[in-house]
Image (cartoon, rainbow, N blue to C red; front, side, top):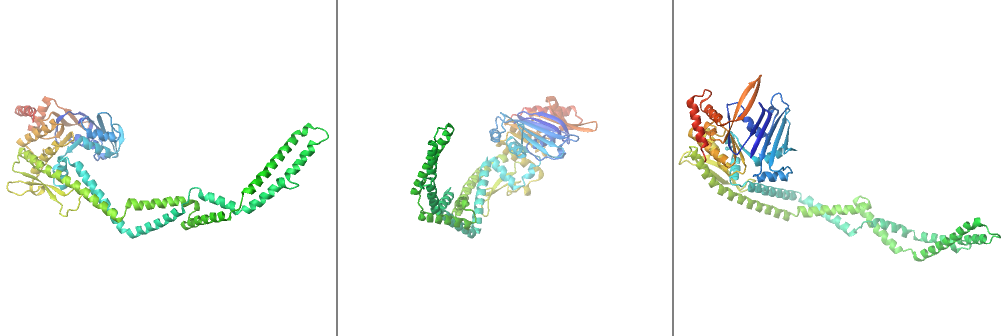
Length: 559
């Protein structure tokens, strides 16, 4: 429920701090005093549209903060958790509006988009405006009210989702049908290209290996010839390198005297002789095992030729063939699997249509069951509101063409019969302004009784009502407050006297500046305010006595 509202520099209010409790709270004051400030501020903190005119003249910005207790509102708790904005059991919404019209929104101190305020606010508060009876003339609102009363909003959302999926499937099918020839040609080309690359089966690293092998095989004779020459130079010729080094070693080892300075050189030559001998042996072993293989060379060159030809065909480098193969295979898979054949798409359309119909039929059953109960309860309220002869009917009219609709199988329309024996007709053709106002109030009271929203705000919904009917309206609003929290802006003393708490709004001027002030009245203050509402500015003892009697009676109301 709403715990506290703080308003700074909004409209003519410089600073307003209000604390709220459970039950019914009446908000009264003379016309133009600023009663609308509270409701407008609540609307803004719930995500309503703002403009620069909302900022008090001379101030840089308007600042509105509302604090809620959500310990008994699971839907709000879940929303905050899902958006990582939860903060124990309290919920603080804030809206800051600058004088240039720009605004910022906060939830529990965290900046957030305005859509977040709207979404969360819908779980916390429901505002019924004084002009809401005009919305009863729109059939779309009739459907929404019935679904709310039937607790069928979730099912209605499911129906809309099913309808959307059906529409999307139909669009895919139509697009596939329109592009069938072009798409089939693309599929055939992709299948051919992918099959060709499948047959090639080029492996990672294969191209480089083939090119290296081809280079070696194509130069085999030259390699053998030059290897033989190298072996001859190393060891096999009379003047081979190994023989010449051996002769040098022999000369140094047979010097007439021993020369220590040449010992290291002699050692080096001995090692060189050994290395040359081993090199010659290695060359002979290589020549014995190395053979030219014309058949393998032809096989390698044919494989490379196929690879090069396919690369030229696709106008890419040979080393890009593997990536191309993967890309074409993925496109083919996408067209084959995700879009499916015409038959598969047609089957999907049929399946989505059937799923939609099942959901729509369930919604129709919920609406049908709720309509009779809604009519009965509204009839009870209309009787209390001195309209016993008015018959209220919720008509569910099946769609003429039975074409699936996002809103279900039927149109919903509220009808009334103002006099016995007359057929029920649309509201705008039967109800007068005063009757429409009372019918609207009856509907709002009935729907509010089944609402999951803990805080209900009524902005002068009792306009055009007076006398004993006004007292009944007060009892209805007090009864709603007993089950939660109701905030009611009213001009009727019969309504204000039955509130659990009473806020009084007054306007005053200081130094050519206008201010609006809101105060919580005690019992004596409430009696004087009820007297003012009864008799105007000049209060007589009789008026005050009447107000006291009305207040005592209103506070004794327990139903």
